[in-house]
Image 1 (tube, rainbow, N blue to C red):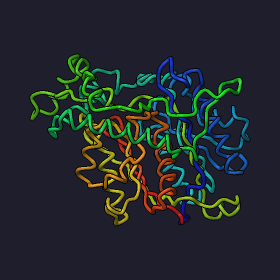
Image 2 (image 1 turned 180 degrees about the vertical axis):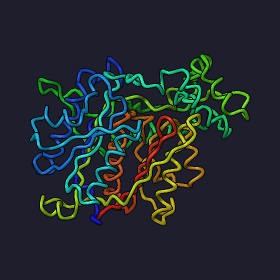
Image 3 (image 1 turned 180 degrees about the horizontal axis):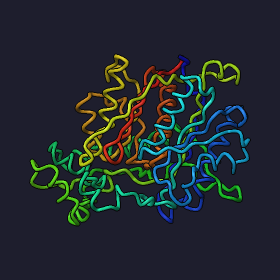
Image 4 (image 1 turned 45 degrees about the vertical axis):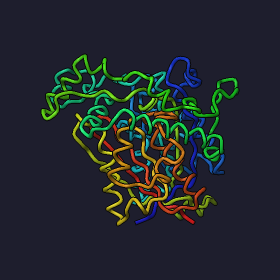
Length: 402
């Protein structure tokens, strides 16, 4: 079996997912094309050398519909012989795209794969695909497909977390993100995004709020209490009869901020790296996808993390960088306490609560940050993990190539 390596990485800054966001005027197609072209140019390779383009995208509708990966290949002027495929596993779509690409290389079906993801939430809103998971009341009732924020509050309620504990995590991620940006830790892989006139419209993660304090977060109202009152709380309580109420503890300061963004990695075999004149940066050791109860929904990223470490005989103490998508503060507190990742390795440069969650793009953005941070620390093992809708989750283990 052929090993699959990360050869190069690139990602856009994350823009606020609103009509006033810096990337709202950039189509998802243009967004991912800028990152695609920047990555191959920086790596010094030609599009002709890429055997496959695989993109994750969670809302495949409108401007993100019709296989955006293949459309991007053609619209960017790449050779029509380069195939493109779009995948969807909700929030872990970009990470799963990378896992699929690595699997193709291991099996010998491809030698060089460009994989990652894109999401423009400002232009293609969450739930825009109108799937039955969101819109069919009978399906929602049968499987308990509650809103992600309700699921997070449910987990916090079950585990007895306090508002103060969650707010403390929210402060932590903002402070770490602000420090990382000030220190230039994202510069190596960042691709500033420009408009049609070539003017840069965004060169930093737009959500970061330096100076965030516990006092400021304590003043925020619960984000999902009103949604719970519309019937979502009742749905949870019908499925989880051991609970008598849901405590709504998460706020916009302890929830992932929705974002526009794109991230990509260039994957290749050792032979491809030599042919292209590239030094492999990290070995993709393997990945695990997991499922969990849709009512609690967000537990699978932790389960997948435990399983991928077990597969390779590793403990959390062996990991030098752990990038866990911050799908609400309760999930971060839970995985730290239950798996025991050292504080200094867990989301050391902040996470999606502070910098934004671009759904399909998040996996690639986190992996890019993980590999860059492993290089900075001269570490060995890194893990990227994400929980998503309907109880899905994926984790990937990489090993830096010294």
